[in-house]
Image (tube, rainbow, N blue to C red; front, side, top):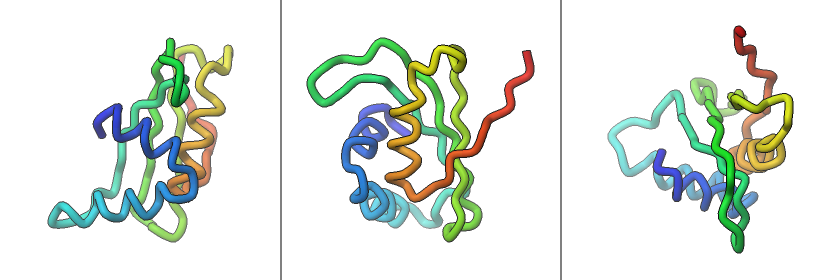
Length: 99
């Protein structure tokens, strides 16, 4: 997904689900998986760090989101990733990253 769309979805809050549905219906079939760039920027301040939110939507009633961040221990994008997952009605689950 385009980073600007992902950023917009994060700031829409509860309205993100409806917006996402309209994006789904623009194509022939909804995607089972979404790759969403996550930035720690706000509506008024540019961000400094990017990470990835992977959403498994194979079961629309029980979407699961996994947050992948190279600086996971620092927690830079934990809150933005949680906001985006909640807006998409996805449960945020721990992402396992081998080192």
